[in-house]
Image (cartoon, rainbow, N blue to C red; front, side, top):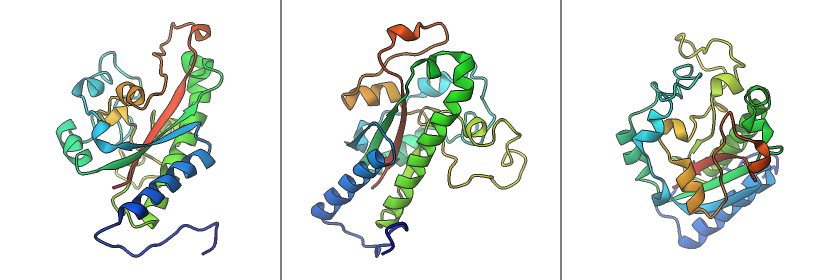
Length: 218
């Protein structure tokens, strides 16, 4: 196989524990190779879908609310997402350390620099999902962060919402929080440090900022 090309493994109905473990470890390592600062294999049962997370998109109102098909109120209902995630057993959780922290805590800087961090996140998410698909996990599915309309379309009118094809169908991903995943809780379960970041926070008191993504494998 050309090392620059992706795999294509025969689809089987049952995968041995040995093969699954090897595949998950390969995906974890790939996340790190692609630029993630940390990555973990986690049970999908760790994921909590909470309606309050989606409500936070409305209260206070997110400036990107409704501006992409991946953001509320255009995303699937929490009950649907809860049922869908419940069918998975394993996932790869990864995070990219955002340095300096001001690139997420300063609103003016975040609007520019945050876009680049989101692009990196979506690139890792999409590549992991494609690799897992090639391994035969054909229902692998990834979720990123922030807003694809801003990160990929640079604020131009969303083609999908205008009834056209997505300009970035293989890169655009829903954010984890946009589908109701409690990211703070999940990251804490993984044993990583995470801190609240908001407009008036002093970056000097925030030890770490991170961009988080997840790929459900099987």
